[in-house]
Length: 502
Image (cartoon, rainbow, N blue to C red; front, side, top):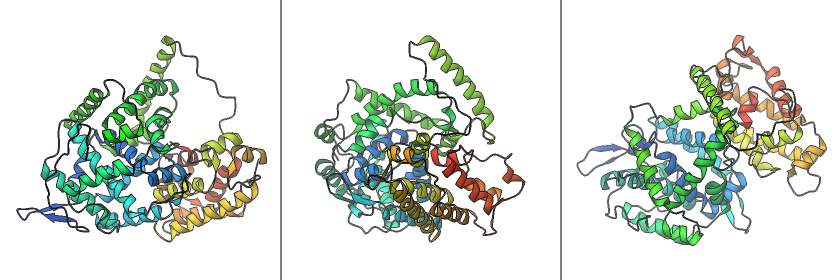
């Protein structure tokens, strides 16, 4: 690997973990776990440096032509970055957790998801998320970025720990069912492989540029800050360019040069300072910086029934005052006021942008409805055949929409076509989507959605004062609410967070 210092950390050969095994033998005969408590990667779950390393790994993934094309065509990472981050962390927790059955179920879910991601990029090149070489590269970026985050923060991994970590990522691919050979068998063979891919295969892709220069500049506020546009915009204007500069400075120098990525003066010093400061945060008391807890708090709205909402509300009020002060002392023009409307109404353009256009490309097509099915399947932790039933129902709905709304025959529906038609979306296919969604949510099959099942689907919006806590949601009521939201373009306490949250 060519690092930012032109060095290869740890070229010595070493034995890696047995592929497909949950542990490996050390030179002394001891067994080291490859997953769960005691594994090397598990120690980094709540490491603050991961916030920087994960961005870096995502950039390196997006620079691969196949990954970049799949992200542009199918991913919701531009419009729903917080959702994507939360789902990624949840998946890693499942894969590197203690329970073997959970790990196997998650691997099967990821394989089903990847099977549905294939197509052709703008240059006519095919991409396939199940390509084992591409999957190996995604894992390689996670491994190398983990190694780099330790080195850049002044706490480099020892050779033994690096080999152990590499063995764990090899085992990750093995659980996914990938054959050996796409990721080099030893750590010493990994670095030439990594150098070759960086030098020969990575490109300055559109997806990579979005992550570096557009994602943070337009990053939607999490629920915690959704009512504080001035505070969020001010912080984003400062932090966004810094994260981009830090990420660029941490990338392999040959790729930076070949891709023409600019490096601002002092970026390397800034990068090392950021990694070092994040590394020092590791010494805070246990539990202070749990990644899942931080994301849960960010997803809380002030009116949530979560016990932490009281503190969130107090923090929200303080931030609101800070936003007022910022507006008072800065020459920025006032925020444009939204057009007057009732609390439940939403225009056709808003509904198209906020609900239907999940990928944010300005059009409605199959990847948008597939993204809805993917999010619903993830929340409900569906297995086959329930997941396929939901995808098939959404595919039928897409065909119904395409027939009714695609007036110019380009295979997709524009915002203008949608708004001009002023459609009633409650056709037979959408009704079938609602029926299937009820069936897969009703885990016990008693034809009622009880509070626990309701909470599983609407966990960010669930309130204990809702009617469902007094009894159960019937099939008719559930389907009626879903159709009312999707066809009436009215805001909904449970469905808005489910389908519009960032």
